[in-house]
Image 1 (cartoon, rainbow, N blue to C red):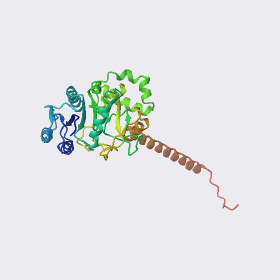
Image 2: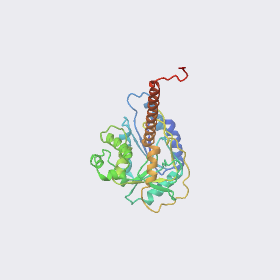
Image 3: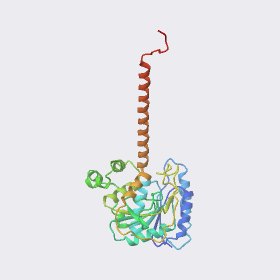
Image 4: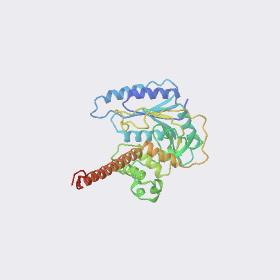
Length: 326
């Protein structure tokens, strides 16, 4: 049985909820918070699908304190998750958070509980995440390392951290111009990538709770304990997803056992791992590919131009018939 309260976020995907809730049932959390958004206007199948999804989580056959927070109307991803987690952390001081498309390895729960206990009073640590985007590369000899990336496909945190979340990102315009921000992301391309996203978040142009949570953690210096194997697989990529409609290198990753937990000697960001995460999992990988394609096309154009000039030059040379008799 998992003693840490679990917050489980659902919407309108009964097939995914069936799979992930079955996995959650094996852990038998002692306390369960279920957060559900309502059907969207203009989507005629939503009402039935939301009802079917909620029916699945009615079947709780283990000793459990269950709390439900269901919205009758559609609040949208950002508002529903923010309001739901505000409700959770008004009741408990720590929680594991899972969405309907996140399928964890059993070791995920042990990892989260260990991190929540060990770093409960360490203000430097904000999150324990189940996601590892290192493509099989281990970072150090411990079972986990520290990252700036607070991946949200299966994670855990404390009330003390969530209360410092600033969804409106009022700090952003000034912090964007600071030396601290530049030092955090010295690579111009990385910095530009996040600036574009955070600019849009500040203007309320993206329906996301996760980006502002990430920005808040970075602003306050919060780190994430990241396992050295992947502990959660996101099985929800596809046309019905909200933000994961296009396949990605990090979709449906295999999970593995973490084994006995060995702690790192120091609390510090593993910069090499974070750089790899950017290039592998985020826009950087595609930016790099795009730039490589542009360079290749430019080189090809230049080669063709040089070839054209040589052909034109040869065609303009005077013709001399050396075989003609005099």
